[in-house]
Image 1: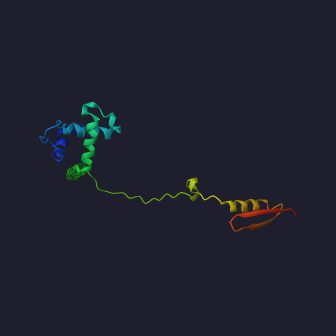
Image 2: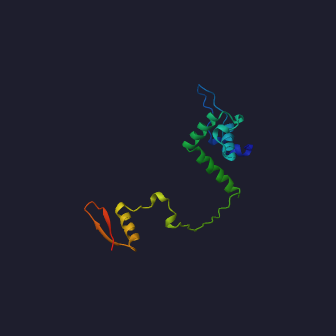
Length: 150
């Protein structure tokens, strides 16, 4: 996965064996290659091939390196090397397109529904063409639609 030249450029930023007692330290290069393989292929951690080591070791290793800022330092080193060799073009393109949606395109759960008294008013206005309506509101904010035949 990683060439020897690529590995040499980042190997001093990664953890090394400490000599402490306990479970032996996994090979840093296989861990990094397993992490790179996982992101390159877009697979789940459980699907990382065993050749890189158990995924239960690779995932915590990646999480630990992300938490302590090691990956940020690796990125800065790689960007500096690529920039020095002219591999990066720093031209930036900015797009100021704005896409707006119509107000009725919002989810229906946010639409305001008429309250009970407003439904009565709507019903009364719908029936208005054939009958004479008297609309009154009481103290409980409930509109009452009374239809009287003329």
